[in-house]
View 1: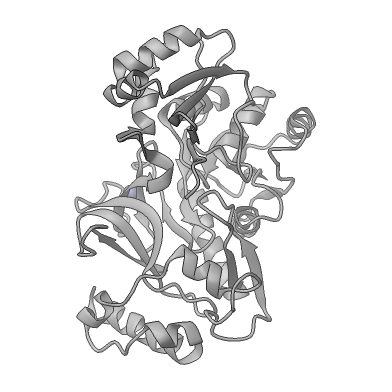
View 2: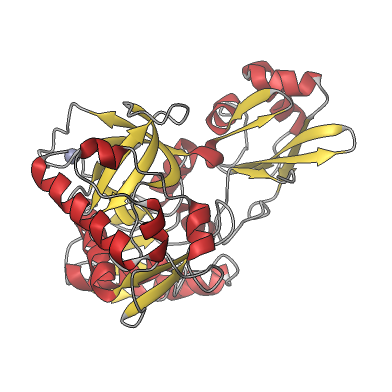
Length: 403
Ligand SMILES: [Zn+2]
């Protein structure tokens, strides 16, 4: 952290402590860097408990007029409410417009905003397309909407570029979404099998934007980083720390904390958003002077501990890669039964053999063999679109055990 950045962060902390009753209790005055690094983390639960309508509202620094109220998707726990002033919202849209430019979008494009209408991603993309000067097709899509109807409209409007959630685009592709020139996805992880399927169907490389409702835009992908799990961090907007979750000490690899440099109405100071990442010091060949982060994903989305075994979603994907007729989507569901914990893995794949899937899993992955030996592994093959979604997304792991 250089002198200028430290000055900005110290001023932000002073503002938050002076104007937010919540932060006045948790922040001390910041005289040097070690003061900052010893501040407590802000958690998702703090946001739920201290932002109205569900919480007390004392995390906010002032009246909410002139702001936009957003709800998180609820994929990683109960929903959180986020207030952004319009100027703050505008910066999020600028970050998204940058992600679109890097993804190859130009002002000649007809860009379909396929995020769910009215949600945080849709609102950001709407303004970003305006900033790009492109042609906006603002129709949006929902997981519960009529796919045939949505695809018919898109076949008629002929977008050349699209933005949306991967699981939603997969659904539209299955319904006959025509190929496009450029694609930007955000909002959920993009697994290798899903990426390969989408790129083949759409005839375009897929870039990702990294962000969430609380923080807005955090990272973008240039042409060099496209297809990797790496992002350029928008360091003009956010200061990212990586800590060892066990010790809380700075680390090269671990949990990500976000301090948002421009969020004043609902400040985010050392926000523990639940994602894991690794700092990449080698920079990027594209020449963009923004630091590079390798995102390892949302902790709770990628692995789960069950029956004394650590189950990693990517290892499940790797174990079934060679099984014929298995689709690109699957879901691991964990629940407690009267016989103990049970892992049920649902695969989309018309005509795929349940027995060959089961065999591939227990032979290819030791953690699954251990679960199989305990009689705790159930494999099911379901038809396309039958995997349950949550807030329109398709989480890879759903933990149904009571907390
Ligand atoms: Zn780059």
